[in-house]
Image (cartoon, protein in one colour):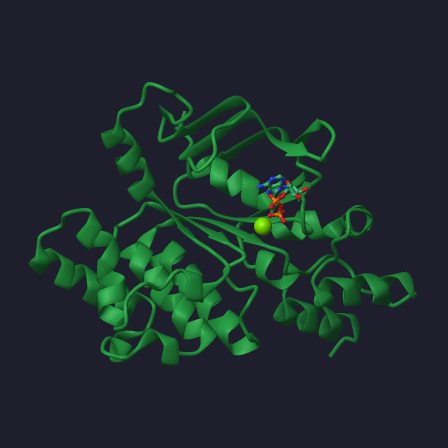
Length: 289
Ligand code: ADP
Ligand code: MG
């Protein structure tokens, strides 16, 4: 059987809080099990506070599970006896891109920023040059190599942050609401980069989002509510269950909702869709056009 790239086994995570009187234990992740295959593009969907970032930080070894196990390429990352070298290796294997691009850029020139990660890994300078060029090309930012990051748009900054991760040659990237602070153009640019990295470089993608339309672009959607996985499947299967999603504060893509609405109001339309083109085709078909 093919080994999972990431295997999460019965993982729980508890934050200790103090309300001024006593310590309160609050579980942010509750007995989650999840397997992600190499090359998969998985969206993790959930409303604010559902536990998405905590889960991402567990996979990226920022936190250690309160209970349960996490394996990356078969290696137990919850093993306390893991060497520093192993930890470094795993951190390089699984990169993470956060929400705010301004917090992720460190240098005053774009190409220096992208070189920062590989420089810290002790990579020889010729190799760094090549990696920086390749990474900038991958996110379509080659012509900005000598620009100042703070003058770029939000979407461009975020693509530079992604290039900085790619330059460390990760096998998997976790995007934690990496489009949340961007305008529609920036969101589209970043989504296109994410899709391209997955399809063309076979990078395993775990994309945390609360945008239904973005989740619909993944191979698979995992829905989290109150620290638990409540749905896991192809976007079309997950978004079929509109009521269940609404019950936990989420919705479905607008085109999915339109088809449900037409069908409920007696319009003879069959099937499900999660993208605009399929939606248009279903309507044409129903109208016999
Ligand atoms: P999401 O990313 O889905 O918005 P989080 O993983 O950030 O959710 O948070 C899940 C739950 O854990 C929330 O109830 C949040 O308030 C709580 N939480 C997150 N970070 C901390 C922290 N550092 N200390 C205590 N509670 C936290
Ligand atoms: Mg979060």
